[in-house]
Length: 127
Image 1 (cartoon, rainbow, N blue to C red):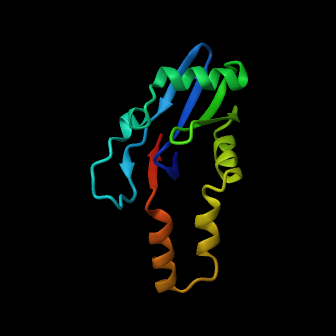
Image 2 (cartoon, one colour):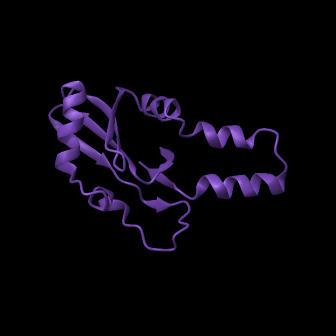
């Protein structure tokens, strides 16, 4: 399954006593033209996977399910037990909705310009 999200968001999954970090594998658009290491995004923001997992554990007692971390702003969210809950959480944060809104009723040229403006911070996450 794939998601479109800013590169500084990362999805974590808690299953039993283990944590799994879902890594991005492909950049959708990079306006800086500098290489992005999506496997170690935490380090870019002075974090480690361990520090993030500690914060995720605090927000929901380490219950099983999917979690979302905004590494740039150090905000953490519990999404729920199902993958759809991750998408719902992203939509509640305004991520994903913007793309849907700009696609409705827009001509081709205008659409291309708007997509460029919104896509500079996006990465495609494959799972």
